[in-house]
Length: 185
Figure (spheres, rainbow, N blue to C red):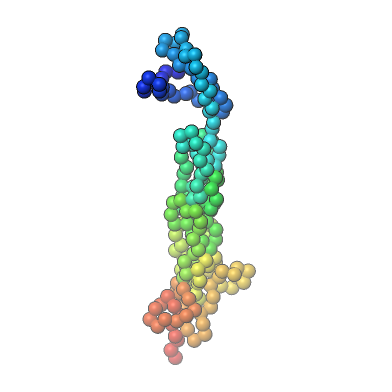
């Protein structure tokens, strides 16, 4: 028996103690002896991992978030450095090498910006600039230009030009030092 509050002649409000999933027979009484002749069958469900409960509805956890346990009433956004591209998941994924995840609730990772190197997983904000003498395109995974096993690596500056640290392109724009600058003899 649980206490209830009469909200109106035909509406009761009560909180059920924790129950295993299943059905519960429900009847009302004023004195604990005389119960209502009409009984209701209340179905009690627990939201599974990867979802949360909104009222009596089970809602799949959205992309960019995770639901790690049963019986949740809300989802949790993926933290910076992680993302989740699929709905209904129990955990987030670390951002891959060559990408970064700067914000909460990211449904996908962002490619490493041009001129920077994203050489570790779970990167929030890339801070390693492309090495001098090279330029780095979007998604650069290593600062080792000699590692030919990695496709997304720094590329040598065009012949007759010099690339300062953090160069973003092979195309020269005079006095824009994020691009190759001509060498003068």
